[in-house]
Amino acid sequence: MAEPPQTEPIQAGPIQAGTIQAAPLLASRQTRIDNSAQTRLDHRMRRVESMLTRPAPIADQQQGPGPKPKKQMRLGNKIRQALGMPLREELNWWQRISWKLKASVIVILVAILFAIFHVTILAVIFGLLGAFLLISGLRRSFKVRRPWF
View 1 (cartoon, rainbow, N blue to C red):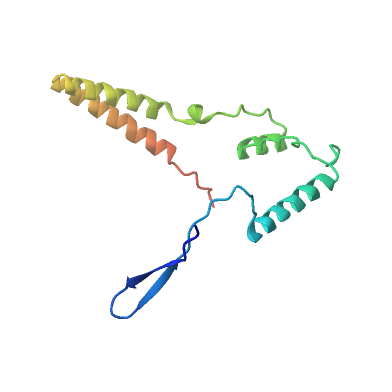
View 2: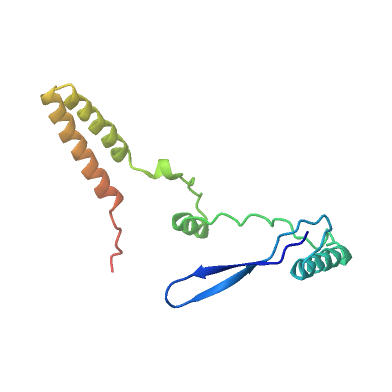
């Protein structure tokens, strides 16, 4: 019933020509593990065993999150503290923005609204007022205090 291996000629171009022997494929229910698969399995088993034999970490050695660092004071409050004066309240980002800048944004948006509705005179008036507020607010926020000397 077993047939001898068949040979077929291969045409690979002018450089190489040869024959390949085709062996019949056999299906088997017997499980065989390749050598490379066996070495991978052995390696994984050793790694699992080494993990199991290690002592568990002790909870006392683990450091939890430490205390939060103290929030540093601004320069003005550092000077006030050194002089013994009462400290000023720290302002958040919204409170530090000049009222002129906040107002200029609203006034310019109103000017744009008037321009959309084709009310030209009011759009120009509110646009100029918003530009004035914006420039004066930016000038104040970028003002650099220079010492006398």
